[in-house]
Image 1 (cartoon, rainbow, N blue to C red):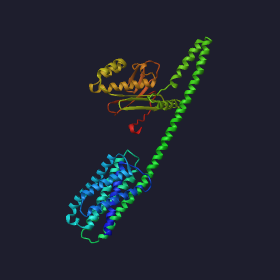
Image 2: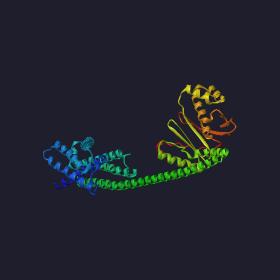
Image 3: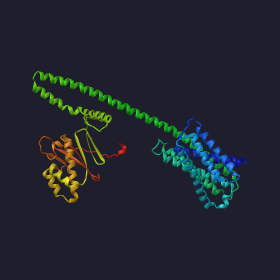
Image 4: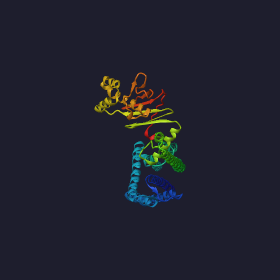
Length: 450
């Protein structure tokens, strides 16, 4: 009788632990004292055992099932927080999962061993322990995949170790079941089976403890990184504020100088001074605007710092791509999404392309027309971005030397340039233009890695 009681306690304790793990996946703890998990599992196991003893005599399985579901529901109301509808659903879901695992395990084992061997008490106990171990593995898998991307999880090697140990236990217990046939040493088999169950529980709790410490450490590390980012942001904003104060102070002095020149009727000197002052505006204005005041402060501060360090960069975006060219010399970049619109393309070519470009475009095969148009367009835009003239300077004042990879200026006030194209981007044309030949390192990044 004592032996049967110990077996029942071990099995219901295993079930209660699985139930607690399952509920913890979807609900938050109400209490946070150290032995809360152990106390809750012991109480739930006691209720399961009491229900089993009460209903065992008359085989009242329906009452036992209803009692288990109600006890899980009451347990969740007591120890976990959340809506009662969700707790009731999870109580039904866990019991359904418990029954499914037992049922499919029974069908599988019955097809292997047959009904006669399953009547053996030792095999029944080993079978029940195997079912609970399978349930344990299933719940660990649910926990891992449900929490993926929602919370900071344990390291992958630790989770693999956690799942591998019960899986290995399942395999050992299956081998033990098959090897028990025809043997009389039931005590040894039961001791090993219960030992495996205890080792699973101990290993699970130990890895949970280690992973919880890792999770807290990761949270502290992430918090430190965020604080460092905030401090850096405040530093950038402080520098920008000081820069704006300096600029306003300089403007005040410069306006005073202009007023003095005008009062003395030194108009030419005032005009020259005003032109010099106007030339300094682009460096002091917001060159980057992303419709976000804080980001504007940071990015414009970075932009001014890059200019002081003689770092040149240029940006272009079209469709799903953004291109950034960085160099120690002036650089221009342009990317164009090849959107088929023959009427628009012809109008653009007639307005902005040179006669040589139009001749080359009209003479090419129809299949190459679309691609060639956007190649010419991206090369020309990268050149005007390199020179800083933009669209106002026009796109037709220079010729493209396709054989030499050069752009020949025909206005006689800009030097010639060199261009390179990036091939292989489907439905896009990308060109980079520099005043001197340079080796370009192309690097493509996904949005998630930015």
